[in-house]
Image (cartoon, rainbow over all chains, first blue to last red; front, side, top):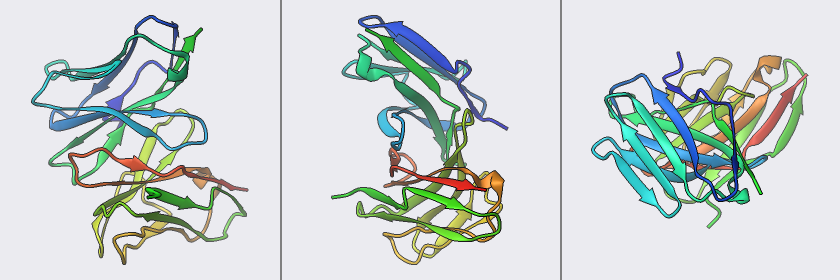
Amino acid sequence: DQQVKQNSPSLSVQEGRISILNCDYTNSMFDYFLWYKKYPAEGPTFLISISSIKDKNEDGRFTVFLNKSAKHLSLHIVPSQPGDSAVYFCAASAWNTGNQFYFGTGTSLTVIP
Amino acid sequence: NAGVTQTPKFRILKIGQSMTLQCTQDMNHNYMYWYRQDPGMGLKLIYYSVGAGITDKGEVPNGYNVSRSTTEDFPLRLELAAPSQTSVYFCATTLDANSPLHFGNGTRLTVT
């Protein structure tokens, strides 16, 4: 049972434009959400997080939005750069999931120069 | 400060062989995790530990064992390798459940 879902396996965007990556979850108890970026042959690296008490968090070109009623979060990258081409995973945890982090299946982003 | 170190980087096993995937961290984190990543399937939690001497099963623990005798080390043991265990294995650590996970660079395992 996939508790965190990324329904778009891939996304292509022109350099300079906005990239929007989406993530849905089913467990209403999730209270901490994260986005990771992964290059081939490397481990995932942390990008940005948000707690359930907020609906938006920004860090430079990256912004995460959380819509708790829709159980949906999104990552916006503005402006997109070729170096952003990677696989992006969303993840979530809850105080009652025994310290476990649940991951989505990933979205492969390609930024076209 | 190496962070999270996984060894080996690559390994090929025959069916029925055993091996231990090593994970060491120098971040002094109490929480450690083992994930596997299969193509198109995201990251699945195998086992995790919230401190030395404490381990718990994740979503896909069958066929694996772990131990946590020190804060720094969290080895993952495969006793009887099966083709279904062909995957990329990632070790991760965090300070607590409300802090980001820090990942190693993975071990790519093939069982033939």
